[in-house]
Length: 298
Ligand code: HMG
Ligand code: MG
Image 1 (cartoon, rainbow, N blue to C red):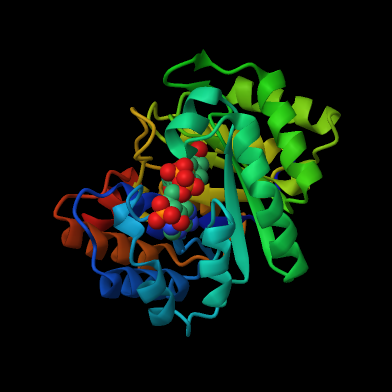
Image 2: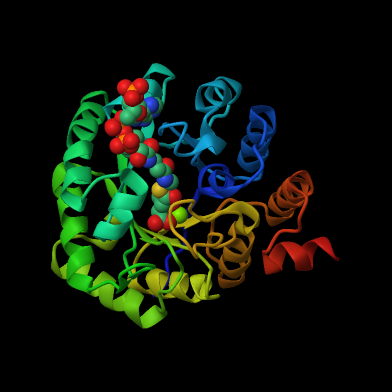
């Protein structure tokens, strides 16, 4: 059966804006986050404490955190290493995410490490964060397919997920970074993860909509028992270190489906759509979300 409530992990300000060519001023990002919280989102991934040369779009993380310290929702941030963790903890971050890869090619492209090397880099981060009482999400990218390596074996994805769990991550977010997954693949991966001792209540799904499959994949995950879904307001996003990654599942498309199914999210779709229309105007191009387009033409 389907859940009665879903927690949406909003990634627009981080996964969305990290992929914009033009730099978005910190004040606009802060207004975006304020508006997302007012629309009812309770988890909003705010930014990343990564090397500023790797992701210049988020180089203003310090400035942004000061502008959103009045926002009363969960505000996780991405952290790749101890340097990033120290920066985040110094600004009062209460939730972090490390981000691993199921494939060697993407570990190298995204983190300049091997898969093992990246996990070694995360280990002290997770330990220190947990000691500080900070919740830790472990992202796993390229869970289904990889632009350089092709289809990714389920055993490979399960093995790295297991290692993230054993390291102490509270939750694993399964990333379909390039959007190639289909619902049968999602079900098979979740079945195999459950068999390996990773239960659905410790899992989130993170679909990119490159092939138009994100919503179908999400429904498959919900039917399986997953209740945390990542999405990006207006369908913003991609990944600068993965060719052919386009935007995430649009939060509005997700909320439209969940509203129709009678599944609670706490999100006001009208306010959310208005926010994405405002952001699209700022970025100078329309939102790719079908729901945003339909609701804003009414
Ligand atoms: P590296 O070049 O190997 O870095 O990059 P290093 O460890 O050799 O350090 C080199 C220099 O960087 C040093 O400075 C460090 O202090 C500095 P120097 O001594 O030379 O002056 N440095 C830092 N400065 C500020 N903050 C830091 C930091 N770390 C090192 N945190 C590194 C390794 C991990 C740093 C780099 O590869 C990096 O920053 N990568 C981030 C890439 C990224 O953010 N990608 C997007 C997020 S992942 C994603 O979008 C996928 C996801 O959405 C899920 C999905 O869809 O699949 C999550
Ligand atoms: Mg992503």
